[in-house]
Amino acid sequence: QVHLVESGGGLVQAGDSLALSCVASGHTFSSYAMGWFRQAPGKPREFVATITGSDESTYYRDSLKGRFTISRDNDKNTVSLRMSSLKPEDTAVYYCAAAPGDTKVPIVLMSAYLYWGQGTQVTVSS
Image (tube, rainbow, N blue to C red; front, side):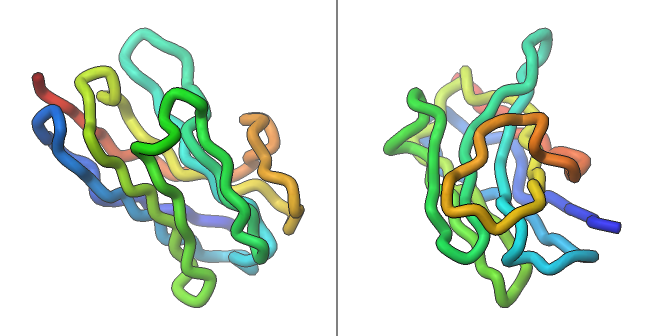
């Protein structure tokens, strides 16, 4: 049973930075691609960033490149998302997710992610 727990969300002001963490358990962490997704009120869930298992190749939503950074620590079973220069439109519930397979190609397709955390709220005030 794969279990993912996010933390680090909160209320920040526009221009601030925030770091989210996700701790995983119940599987061989490095054999899974890890991703972050987000869902704003009234909008569908969307891809944010992903990182492959052992290669740690990353891929980002185009509009977030340069502001968001995904990283992982396979020894600590943790994946992080560093967000900077936050904007009100970044307000959403952020979800951590795991996709089986230690691929060398970043996994963007949401349906490939079989395991999801409960989400953490990020609110950016203007």
